[in-house]
Amino acid sequence: MEGAAPATAEEMRKVLRGRRRGSVQTSPGPHTTEEMLAAFRSKLDARGERGIVNLFKNLVLEPRNPFEPSRPRAPRREVVAVGALVAVLIVAVVWFNLQPLR
Image 1: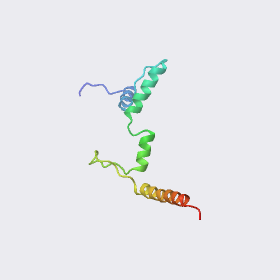
Image 2: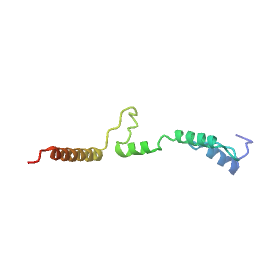
Image 3: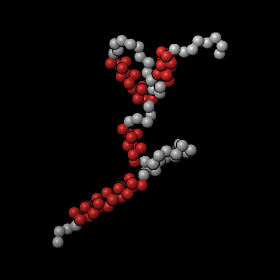
Image 4: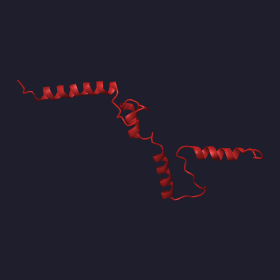
């Protein structure tokens, strides 16, 4: 690359900002609500790891196996243990409340 001029700081910032995942290029100035909503939705769609559902899945399920991405994730041991205790508690409450009074 002989004769190429070095990049300025502003050019580098523009390149690095453009490389951000899910970045949306908007022109300066006023925008309509629909334009901003479309930009916001496209930004959210580009970020698959965000959201309440994904946060809940990451808390309840084991981490993904990068070597088997199509395999479903198993629940964590703690979730199974707490679920079993809650189930036993519910069964005990129902059992003793449905018994006839003596």
